Structures are given as structure tokens and as C-alpha cells.
Amino acid sequence: MTIQHHPSDELLTAFAAGTLDQGQHVAIATHLVRCSHCRGWMHSMEHVGGKVLADLSPTAMSHDAFARIEARLNEPVQAAKPAARSVPASLDDVAGLPAFVRRYPAGPWKWIAPRVHLRPIRLPHANNTRVFLLKSGPGTKMLEHTHTGIEMTCVLSGSFSHEGGRYGPGDFDLGDETMDHQVLVDPGEDCICLVAMQGDLRLNGLIGRLVQPFVRM
Image (tube, rainbow, N blue to C red; front, side):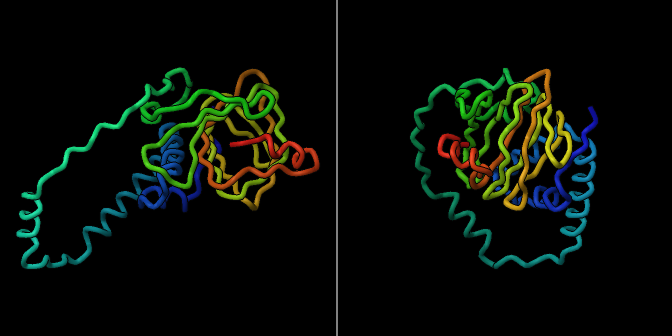
């Protein structure tokens, strides 16, 4: 399947500049692994950035810069105490997940709605973006909803549709507080996505308000 949906130029520029937080960086990088078009765009941006840096005028260092560095080399180093770690759940069973994401520890699948399960991915640095896998059964129709923050979705396997079109493996979807959409998972197989979410999901309509307290993402 040809990838049809990509991050915006603004998001790719922010990724290249390193201004995204870690969760959003993981989402964009997951798309780049599969998308040669966006990788080519990124290489062009990196070339432009390198040219800008090369053309900058050099700045003189302070006269004691080297001496201060040498002084820090002689400072005693305290060995960090090893943190107790639990054995992380393996992500090797998730088709389409990039190798770099598989290195992160993950929790177990947990039920969040009928035929919908979530699996948290624990990043090494805390930030405002939660990263998790979302698995929805074939033919699942989710309630119409919006978001209180930015949600980045990368399809790993299966596919879904909403007002913005159809999204299959490799496609990237962006949601925020300006969008209302209702997701319908295509028949045939589970749809598994990597999601990077800020804020909360807000369900619309009377039924949505009734079930909202039971939905935690």
C-alpha cells in the first residue's frame, strides 16, 4: 500500500531542528522509517541546515576556556547507584514496529473500550507526550471525539478511515482540538497504531459523555 498521509512540513522541520519533545520525536521517526518520501525531504533539510551552520562567522572563545575544561576533568566523579529494573515486556510481537521503539520498555495490553486495547511505552525521559500502542478490532467504530492537545498516530498494521480519508500501514494522522472525527477500523484484521498524545481525548454526544469516565488513554 502506498503511503498517502504524511507529517506537515512544519512538523518535519521541527523534527530536523530537534525542537519536538521525545514522544513526538518517536512518532515522527516511526513514520520516517517507512516513508522514503519524507526521508528524502529530511535529508534536504539537514543539508540546508548544515550549509547555514557552515556559513556562520566563527566566534572567538574566551582566553581561559581550555583551562576551565581541564579543571573540570580533574573533578571527582561519583558513581551512580544502579536503579532496580523490572524486566520489560517484549515488543517483538508487534508487527511493523521499528527496531528503535522495540528497545523501550512496555507495559501489558489493557482494555480501554470494547474491542480496543492500549499498551503503554515507557520513554526514558518524562515529558508531556504519552506514547502507546492502540489496537482496535476489525470493524470497530469508535465514538466521535476530539482532543484537548495534539495527537500523532502512525499506522503499523491494518487500516482505518475517518473524515480525513483512509489510513493504512505507514500513514501518519494528526489530530488536535480543532478536529472532530469518528474512526472506523477496516474489516479483516486488527488495526495497530503507535500514538503520541498530549492532553486528553474528549468524546462527543450524549453517549460519549456517559462513557467518558470509563475511557482512559
